[in-house]
Length: 157
Image (tube, rainbow, N blue to C red; front, side, top):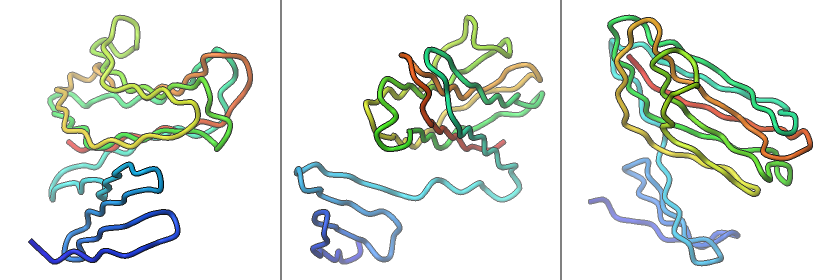
């Protein structure tokens, strides 16, 4: 394992492994935060990047849909979502597996509810496509008011 460099920064203590890309941070509240770059698409595979960004009105949602091509296996590798600082209260970012192409009767892959904040998650989920099955990224408001929300997922097949 490579030597670690420990240094003081304005928002806490950082630990970096300069031979690797992962970093760990102990913030001022004492929480450990670990980060790594999103996974890279393997050679010969097709990248999938789907995102949604914009205002979502109160008690409504906005969907971004990716239909998995027939005969392909989609590997989901990364999920992120959040909102403009101070405006993301009572908001949810969801990722749905939709065998029939729509959210109705589908199962949720990951959900992030926040008041306010953002979320990032590494995934390793496989979904076989039949030309109808879809992955839906949903940005949703749970109360009145319009707020700026974003969501993103990446993967490959």
